[in-house]
Amino acid sequence: MRRIGIFLRSVALPVCVALLLAILFRPIYLSEGQPNYLLAWICIGFPFGIRRMFLWLVPHRFDLAGTVGVVVLNVIVGGIIGGFALVLQLISGVVNTIKGTA
Image 1 (cartoon, one colour):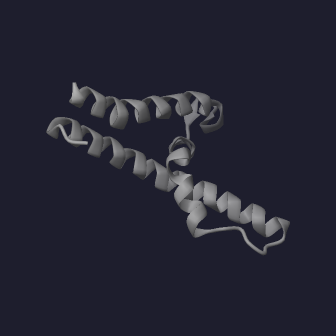
Image 2: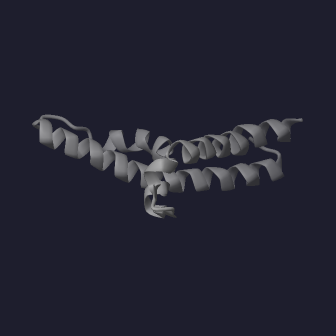
C-alpha cells in the first residue's frame, strides 16, 4: 500500500500535471501542425522550475522594460530548468517506488 502512495505522489501526479499542461498549451507550441519541441519543453516545464528562477534573478530597481525583460528571462530559463526537474523527479519517483522508500 505504501508503494502505491509513493507512486501516486511522485510519479502519477506530475505526469498528470504535465499532460494537462501539454493539452492546455497545445495551440501555443503547434504551428502549421508541426510541434516546436523547445517551446513545448518550456511550456510544460514552466511550473516545475519557475520557483527556482525567481530566487536567482529578482527584478529589482529596473525600469518597466528591464523588469519585463527579467521576468521573461525567468520564464524561459525556468521552463527549461523545470523540464529537467520534471524528468529527474519522475526518474527518482520510479526508483523510490521500486525501493519502497519515500
